[in-house]
View (cartoon, rainbow, N blue to C red):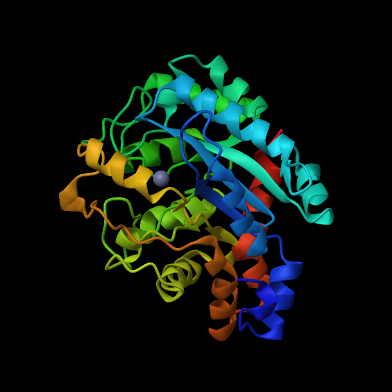
Length: 335
Ligand SMILES: [Zn+2]
């Protein structure tokens, strides 16, 4: 869908074009050597997105798989430099926008990708990884997961945080257990993000975060990225309206400076179904994980802009929500 023929108001089209649009979490197949889905990155470009963070691994996959995926993505992106740009610095984001390309950074869901070696953090940063979360649903050696009996932040987890701060990697608390999250907030004195977490007050789920956590995150100067996953939005309904309900709740609670987008769109639906089926301890059926999880695709992003305008949001607040806030955190944290 081209933005001009999308039925959006002229104001929304102008805003999509003027704004820095940043989706802080998207998922391509986590298989080294597989480039079959990467041309679909054009979906972000067609939606007016300027920066996307592509996931390169999570706790169920080995560290070496994460490196293989990074090598694969980076190689492909460099081969398609007319449309895509590997983002290393803040200035690269301007370069991407000015040349009409999609800027790409990477993210890792869980500290297992470090293989217990702290120097891997700098290695990943050098390869473009700009945020990492501590623990993916289950406990690991760094901290507790949000669907486990959270053991809290470990001493090793504190070392991981200190090294992330040193190299400039943003600390994310999505998928992480509540005790661990609160201990991270205590330990760290810089903006913390939830890259892709929705509001528990709007829809109750272990992956969603309660209002007090939203407030604490906002106090750090951080951002809560709302995702487009149906079982976290509510009723497995991945609609623009449902996403905007969550955005609006966090705005009412914490202000428009602390909300962003982390759609978490998975391009290979078969891969997500296989992960869910093969890992019931990480994706328990009783928590709604099953075949047919609904997801909102990137083409919905301009519609979110329109929906916020329809609700009476000011242009400047829409700009913050659609990417300005992610940019602010990057400017503060990246080295
Ligand atoms: Zn996730």
